[in-house]
Length: 234
Image (cartoon, rainbow, N blue to C red):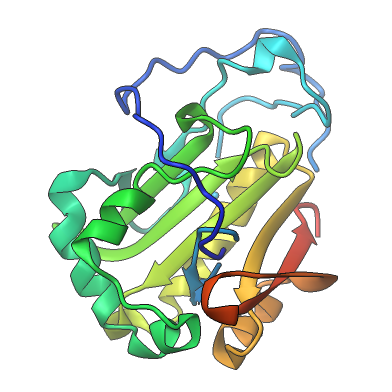
């Protein structure tokens, strides 16, 4: 996902109780690098019960929280907070080519803004900005938005892997797990934005089953971002 058009928001506490709706538990349909969306960027998701995620707004889903701890079978996953900014910056600085394509440089200030950046009409309850850790070491970060641009779609706003882990399949395994989780959680599609002139990023997302939608947008510095998506059932 790219970075553009996101607005700052004061976040509520990260840890909220998961309130799972009792309807649709049984016999439910399952539709379980690096790249970028508007103000997002990206480099290189097993619930114990079945759920059907609605394709249009249903109020009883508003309190349903995704189980981010199941975004990976391999790594420990938790929300990223201000105390993680130094580790986040180090990870970002390990990917200079990504930022060259984006025509910007990572700083503690813009990373702090990323912690609460949101697309239009979304709230912090829809945002899962998480880190993937091996012990205490940050291996990758992911910014996932629930229900954007519409209900039933999971939007990857930013995914980046530490350069030391690239070429080992780490990014592919993480995204495969995220896609599997989204499928099991009932999402129909996944969507993201990719800088048009970043062939490595585009190749990664194509390998992960994403294809260009034909839509694009131009962000700051005249950087064109193409939109890509995939079916969760694929």
